[in-house]
Image (spheres, rainbow, N blue to C red):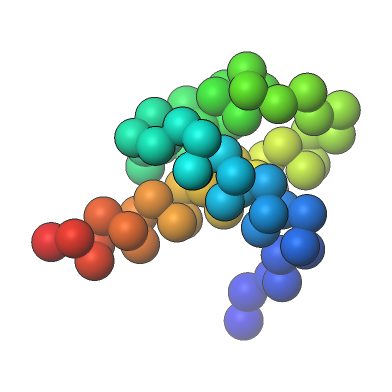
Length: 66
């Protein structure tokens, strides 16, 4: 079983994907730096959660487009 993401994480991730399409990839560490660049997140735990969810969504979207 996985962890449940809060609405804050889901909403922020969807906004980032819609504002900056094609900028995020399948690499967690590069997504983490991009999240840090585009948002002013004070908590590293929330930043990492957003970056991980972004990575997961990008991988899912890429797999569906094959």
